[in-house]
Image 1 (cartoon, one colour):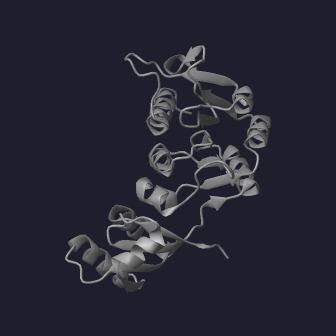
Image 2 (spheres, helix red, strand yellow):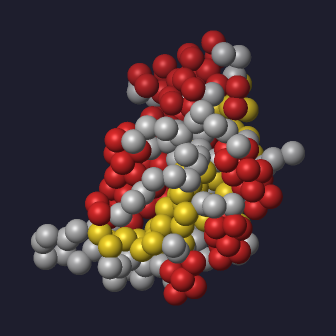
Image 3 (cartoon, helix red, strand yellow):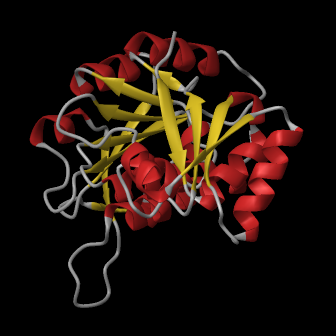
Length: 255
C-alpha cells in the first residue's frame, strides 16, 4: 500500500479535483473562511463523495510544512511514483509503442530546490514528458511544496527515484535512447543539435551543473545561447527552453 501524501494550495487541489478526483482520499479545509475558492472546493469534493474534514490554519501548516497552504490540503495516494524497475517497465512499453511520439524523459542530476523541481515537473507535464527521473539521494524529492509549485503535474507525471543515476543512463543507452545533457562548456548549441528520436534530456544541479560522471554518459552536450551579461539560467527556465526546442523539432518532422 502506498504512503499517503499531501497536495497543497488552491490551484493544485482544484486541478486534482478536476482531473483525478478518485485519487483523493480526503480534503482538509480551513473552516470559517470567506474564501469562495475554498468553498467551491468543498462543494465539489462533497459532490464527488470525498470526505472533507475541517482544520484550522495551524493544523494545515503542520501537515503541509508550509504556512502558504491557502487554506486547503488534499490527501492523495501517489500512483505515479516509480522505482528503477518501474521506470524500466515504462521505458520498455513506450519503446514498443509504434504510433506514439518518441520516448522523452527528463533527468535531473541533483536538483535540490523543491521550487525548481516543482517548476520542472509543471513544464515537463506540459511538454509531454513520459517520466521525470531523479537520484534518490542528494536531490529534492516529492513534497507539499513541490506539488503546489507543480500545479497538478506532480499527481500526473510519472516520477522515478533511482539509487544510481549513472547506471540508469547506461541501460537507457543500451535500449537506444539518446542521452542529451546541458553544459555551458558544450561545443554544440541547443538550436543546432539534432534532438529527434527517443531521448533522455539531462539537466544539472543548481550552480554546479552536470556531475563529471553523468556528463561522460551523455551522447551529446548542448548549451543555451546567452546574449546578455548573465552566464546561466535557472534550471527550471533552461529545462523549459530545452523541452520546447525538442517539441519544435519533432513538430517539423512528424513520424
